Image 1: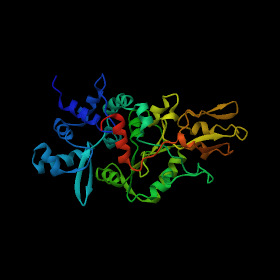
Image 2: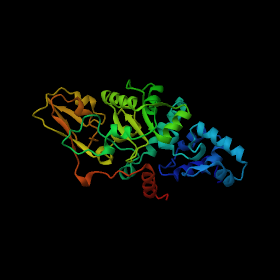
Image 3: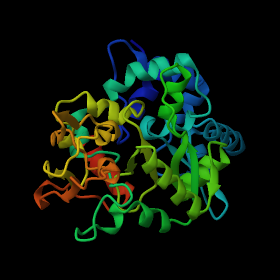
Image 4: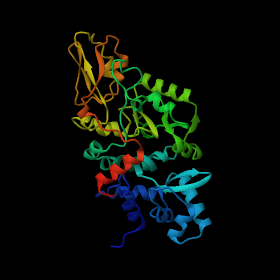
Length: 353
């Protein structure tokens, strides 16, 4: 059977670090047909994960430079590929489906696309691969880590925000898509923080708006108040921070279905508790996004196999019975210095590099 352009595009996306595995139902092809025209798909398969100028891409496909430039810019505006600028010159690269193409459609969703993506995401999330190289990690919120515990710079949300020069905020695609199909929650929508060239892409494409550091810090404060888990990119120099709820976030939902989600999450902390101090108020049970706490009699009891070390229960515990402790060194996942290194490792583990 002759491979059509959408099958070639699916295979091309599957050769990127994040993957795009085939399914028996072919739902992944339905998704691509919804998003790409045949002409766009034919050009997309010729892009690499490394940003390149128009001239290089035009030469590769043996087409007129101006014609290719117009098509690439239109595709980047549609959220099908990534664009960054160097000295004012646009550079284009292939984008993964997640994190990437799917998130770039936050303002362009419809129920049919949402249905297909929700059918597909369980195939895309592979627990053992996530355990080896997660694309996101979990960091503690606010004041959930006390001063006597060492906390590294790349584990502190405020520090991560302050070290970046350009910041944008965008709607959370997970809460938006759930809201559109009548399953959403009432937690804040505009909470997705994006940095650097990612921020530029979001703003230029109308997906978000630039904000100052103070507003970004206020969003983090609101996230903690609203019971949202902080999940930055799995790198010391981050490109985004997701503020996630356990009822809508596709990553947390996938993890919650597993019996021991803690074993898959990149997080340096875990909960510890003193039952003698617990007053049985149940606030921590409500705050926990991973069902890791339950009331047994009049005492809150944590399930350490489900705790991802986000700290949401700690900041609401008035009795002081809950606190975060650093995991033993051998249980702490190493955080790559950059997202590029994360993707290289992910590609190698998947055998596509």
